[in-house]
Length: 567
Image (cartoon, rainbow, N blue to C red; front, side, top):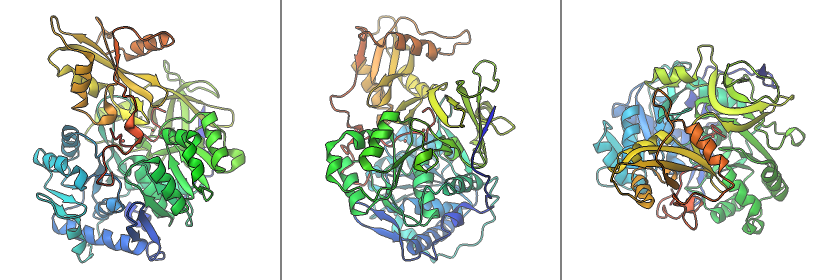
């Protein structure tokens, strides 16, 4: 059975991404477009458009051409979107990178994307310069003041702003290159075309998610597809004002929402939990809130209702993937049509189906299987990886999401599990294969497997099963610390158990599902004696513990990756 949108199809213009996002810039020239919620620095719509043209002209003078890629390696800041739009204006693309990545992770993405230029902030400059040294990236630009080894971003703003027209094939030319692990494996560049992003902006706009008089809180990371498309691009394309914060800090976020009379909040379940439970919320006036959209992981019925009741606003959910730009389903935005616990219905011009995991046969209402999506927002494919593309994207346009769920009789989607092997730590994506590869570089490790296990606060945490080499000695703490030094904070292994055997298929593939089922079976019992926990007494993932001097990665695929974990 094919589930289609209850909304009529909409016309999607054959317009390039940058002019579409900036379509209101001239009319709203004096209106604030993006405001720094900490410093008050403001870009009006006119200033934003002028800055984009100036940076584009300067980049063109430095040799940036159609098809080139620039990288953004920075926490949220008002200038974030300027290089992105400048690249788009020149027919190039931008790849966005988690600023908490290690140098190795940064270098992998820079080399894989073949990024020509790299934009960063002072807080990440040291890693950025090392990343440049180990890649083909030609120049590093730093927001703020000059720094040794980098060019100040302000130098690019001195351009005259005259940009020669560049012909863009909106259906073929890539404008955004975020990275995703897809349904399994290591991160891959997701090729999103101008039409992909414009289509998704039109799909969301048609539902009235954002209005011109809205003020949006931008606390989730702009490098993530959720922040990039749903917060920044959608907000600007509809003439709204975005208030940017460098990182999540509950009191700061609440104060900012009160000060700027925020009317639209884009959240994730850990923040929703705080909004429902923390007493401090009652100390702030959040009455202008019109709607909160929660994504990055499923939101339970009780929590959704609790936030809606406490804040007296509409709480909706959405579902999608980096590979769908990201939105595929969204709750209708009338109170009587919101179905708590559901990720909503297909957006316009979009179809879904649920298929049997064994036979691939289409299933009917309330029958669980893998969710597949087809629509104009579905990616072009994975960069330089036709095999991975073929594994997830059918010739007929159906994208296999790796999420398990069902539709009810009214075509509302419920996501219940994941076929994919990815771990979702507070909504952020963690690839088991990456952690296993890191463990296997330790001289004492003979074999390793990593799976997700349930955690009340984080949703899921990585647990490793390790076989030590004969006569080798290593402690769980030692191995977890070893991996922690080689991956971003949100990827750290939180549990480790020494075992004598890891289940594998005849072809040698790790049977993670077997380990997951074994772990679930013993969950009610106490953890085995050889299992070790690395959970801190107070998990700082939702605090501002680290990035202090500088304004600081979706079920299965729900607008992937929460936001950078500061620990």
